[in-house]
Image 1 (cartoon, helix red, strand yellow):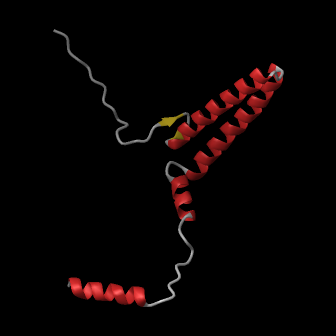
Image 2 (cartoon, one colour):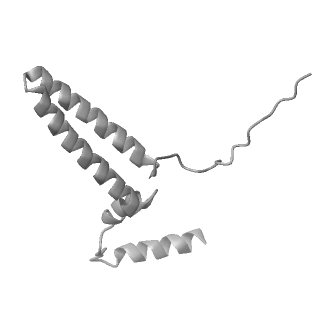
Image 3 (tube, one colour):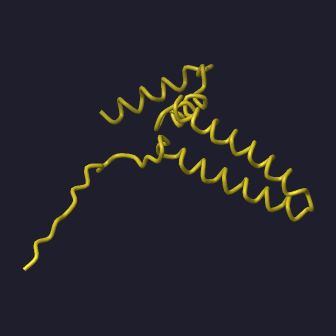
Length: 112
């Protein structure tokens, strides 16, 4: 009779990480590489010299890697979503009438 050996998963509730990239940045890098592949195919089919295509895609790919890794280091796993959400918060909420507060007071009295 053989005994079974089970590996314990010690990464439970952790985000996915690949070569230093965490969470959504992996998808961003993959999407960018897919777009670069499509751009290369379009340039190649259009008749552009293949060496020029390779150089252009190589430069764009290098820039993509540098930018995605920089964003990943700067914002971390959830920081970029928080930064985008922070931009959508208005700096000031202006209320030109006290009617809003009076209605809230009446609703509180009626409920209580």
